[in-house]
Length: 111
Image 1 (cartoon, one colour):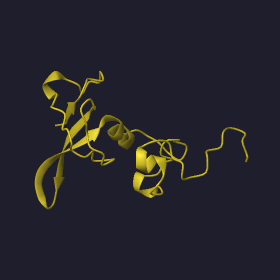
Image 2 (cartoon, rainbow, N blue to C red):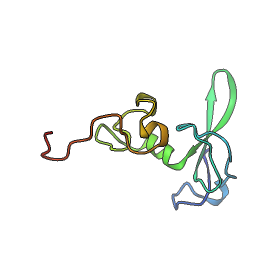
Image 3 (cartoon, helix red, strand yellow):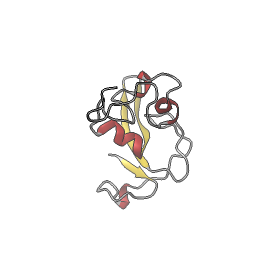
Image 4 (cartoon, rainbow, N blue to C red):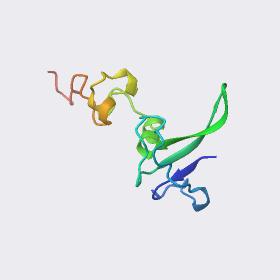
């Protein structure tokens, strides 16, 4: 069962008995950045062929980005996985809006 850490964000998953200590210094399973004091997120069970069950931690935003629908019009990731962006892309290197692809065109914009 998943556990959550940090301050509650009011979701049904934030039941007090599922609250866990923040896994400070552990890398986020999505962005690989360390989890720090004050971060919010989820700790999920994981299973692999080479090892016993273990736990992986996600920043809340990283987890939500992995499960919420998005596509080519998503200005943050442009519908691409992080490793598909150029190494120096703002999305890949800092989690900001993508700057390695041409800007998205707005309605009626044909540049």
